[in-house]
Every structure is written in C-alpha cells, then in structure tokens.
Length: 201
Length: 87
Image 1: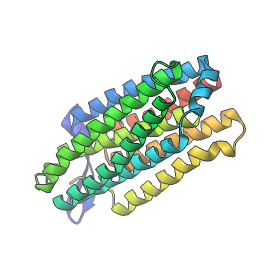
Image 2 (image 1 turned 45 degrees about the horizontal axis):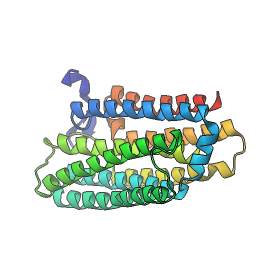
Image 3 (image 1 turned 45 degrees about the vertical axis):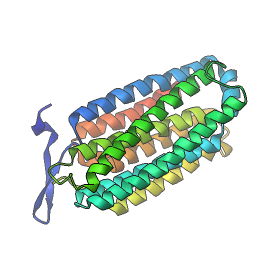
Image 4 (image 1 turned 90 degrees about the horizontal axis):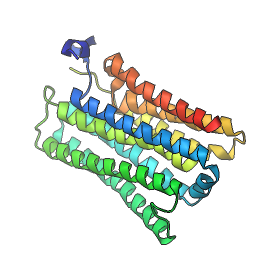
C-alpha cells in the first residue's frame, strides 16, 4: 500500500498539522490480521462443535470457573488501558513515565497468567485434561494458544518499556512502540470474544 | 503529528469496558430467551471491540480502511457465531 494512502491530514493543533495515519508498522497490522484470522477459525470451530455436541459442552462449561474468566477479562482490559496511557505519555515525550505505566500493565497482566494457571491446575486435580473430550480439547487448545499470545505480548512490552525508559522513542520514531501496543490490544480484543464464547453462552 | 486520545477518553473507555464485561457475564440471569441472550452477549462483544479498536488502538484516527476492517471483524465474527448457535 502506498504511504500516501495511509496519510490524510485531519486538521491543526496549536499550529501543528495533524495527520490520519495507521499507528505502528504496516507489517505488524498484517501480522495482527493473520492472528485474527487464525482465532476466527478456532472460535467458529468451537461454536460448530458445540452445536454438534450440545450436552457435552453444557457439562464442560459447568466445570469451568466463570468468575475466573470474568477476572481475566477485567485484568486484560485494565492492562490494555495502562498500555494506552503509556503510549499517550510516550507521545508527550515522557519516556520514564511511559515505562512505569508499562510495568503496571505487565503486573496487571500477570494476574491473568496466575488465574489461568490456577484454573488449569484445578481442572487437572479433577482429572480433566486436553484428552478428556472434544470440549476440553478445544478449551485447552484455544485458551493455551491465547495464553502464549499474552506471554509474547508481555515480552514485547518489556522490550518497548526498556527502550522507553532510555528515551529512545520520539515523535518521529515511535512506530515500534505503537506496533507493540497494538499487538497487546489485539490480545485483549481476542479475549473479549473468547470469554463469552467459552464461559458465558 | 498524529492525533492522540486524551487520558480522559481512555479512562472513560476503560470504565465502559468494565461495565459491559460485568453485564455480559450476568445477563443470562435476566434473559430467558436463548436467541435473545446469545445476541445480547454478542452485541456486547461488538460494543467492547469497537471501544478497543477506536480508542485503545486509536484506529478512529487512522485511515478508514483499517478501522472498517477491524470493525468488520468484531461485527461479522459475532454474527457468524450467533447464527451457528441459533440454527
């Protein structure tokens, strides 16, 4: 896509020209689209399998801890919120503040990991694992795949936090930061579809 | 210069997302009709997705192509899932 097509002037702010542009690298957005496609296939597959085995899925969902799913949703949304605040701080050139906000985002996200591990352990204690039935095969596959994305997102956040703390980003060189933040928001967005699909409906 | 969302806007969006999450978790207690329940929960997914895309991802200030692409995702995917459940 031509760079010109990505930029559109939207107005002025204190004499500075404001431009409409895609935050982050174009390559990251193609990667995000690929990830969204993979998860869409998994989600649709889960819904189809549920329609084919309704009783098994009702029984399986009853064994899940809905409140832990709720806690995880709230933690990922809160973590995303702190990443959005961190990006704002970076846009203002406040590297140290931005890095601290990213640390808060990661601490909140670590609650998600702890809850997820606790959830897996409590299922294992009930002798439930990935081979139990189709519901739990899909449950472990989808949630573990998502967990891997959370872990990768946290590695990316650590990387950009270190660079932000050294003030290596500025107004003309912030694309890497925006790409990392966008990836994290994608992980959050996937969970807000996953949560009702597996825990609520 | 790229236009950025204010912290106030981000905070409002975060609170709205928290409220929507709690509503979607317990909405089943208030709705008996299966189809209505499913589409209510999936409509909340769309509302939450729109907030993340427009506010957190800042795509409301990006070229419309990318915004529409992602909004299409949080519209079409819940619709497909909803129809699979009610058919």
